[in-house]
Length: 203
Image (cartoon, helix red, strand yellow):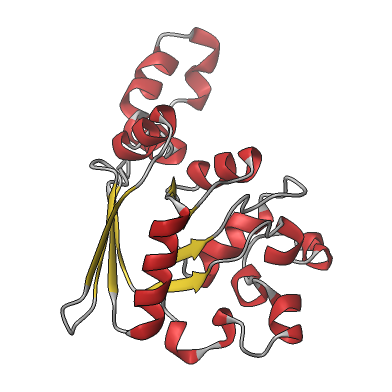
């Protein structure tokens, strides 16, 4: 079944820093892995070693689904390992001021929405998340809005941007090539049945 991504809701991880490159997201020594399994535990590993107060080290941010970042997020080398590490850590969406183009494309191909917000809105989101760790952030990809609601009642809302092509791919399930293949199995079998030399492969 094709999986459409229309919204992501959950707690958030504040990391409002600029020019975070893919080598910081996942250090180069982890690129030797055969699969992406286990990459999540190494997300931001060097930054976390250097700074014990890094949000990815803090127990209060474990389980966060939405990452709030700054300008030019995901710059540097075009390694797919970076969004894979974030996703396997638990991040399902990113809200930032801007993105490196290849990093953005890799995220969308994994079904991870990356939306742009103004600096002022990112600062307001970060302040609320830090002031109340139970704040729930809701990203609506279709409406292109983000809403952060603290249990005490404080609310932050903002408009966000996402390129039309990426939005369509996510909200229609176009990013999910494996799901499309599974859904198209009857058509594949019908086509195989029409080609004589493929009969021995028919199931």
